[in-house]
Image (cartoon, rainbow, N blue to C red; front, side):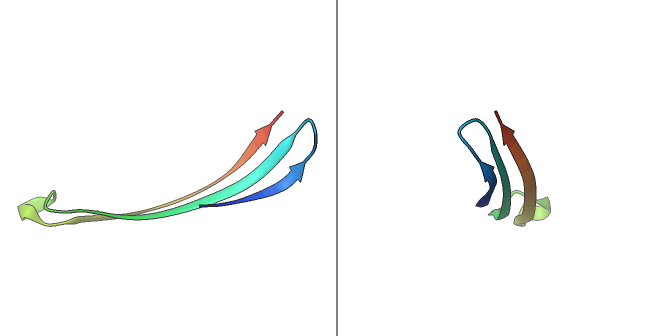
Amino acid sequence: MTRYYIHQSARTDVAWHTEYNWFRTRATGTNGRDVVGQLFFTGIDFAL
């Protein structure tokens, strides 16, 4: 996960962050196979 603060002051914050996740669960798929997944998330947070 990465986070970059676009603007910071005593009253407000704006942050942009991204996250990438790769995962595998063993023996949970069809015929006992592994299930593999990927996730990419990006967002902007505004805080007052």
